[in-house]
Length: 117
Length: 114
Image 1 (cartoon, helix red, strand yellow):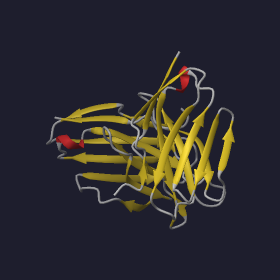
Image 2 (tube, each protein chain N blue to C red):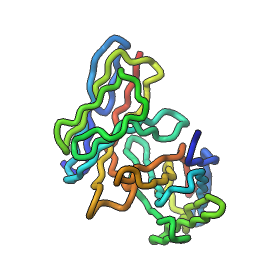
Image 3 (cartoon, rainbow over the protein chains, first blue to last red):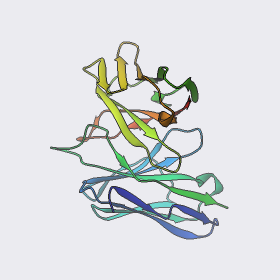
Image 4 (cartoon, each protein chain N blue to C red):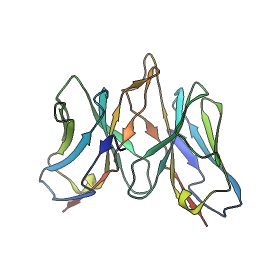
């Protein structure tokens, strides 16, 4: 496996379900991100982890709960979501600090398409 | 309030012609500007970037121009090819706590007709 992989690629859940999205990066990067892409909206930053520590939480509702057990894995735990949470959830990674990537260059996974019924 | 704006949701161009995608920003503290390309069912991939201290960066068929006084940048693709058909996201980043986290626009869908 290379790059950034996300599972599942598609997820349908009811509003009372609990599910998780998984992301794994094989690039040796030290930062990981969750973005949300809704139709006709910009990519919205949700969470950032640098060296496994959460450094950004962009006013994301508590029904989204991130987890970063190590620098290669990132989860997004979903609980009691709303239909308006239906979107494409994108995971990304980058190398920050000395020797890092071009500033702002992220490596994205293919995304998890979430539908909340 | 959107800090990075792509006001054209779509652009249609004939193969071989030039494609010009535009982007405006509001935050004068941005240091880097990037373009990402996204095909359906794939994640965005980095295409080209430019530092705020430059006004042009070229990579093959892709050139990005930056006009700081107008807070405007554009991506030129010449000649355009059908394989360039994708959604193009403009992004901008400034240093926050030692790292650069890009802010994205809504994207422009480019269609290149054979």
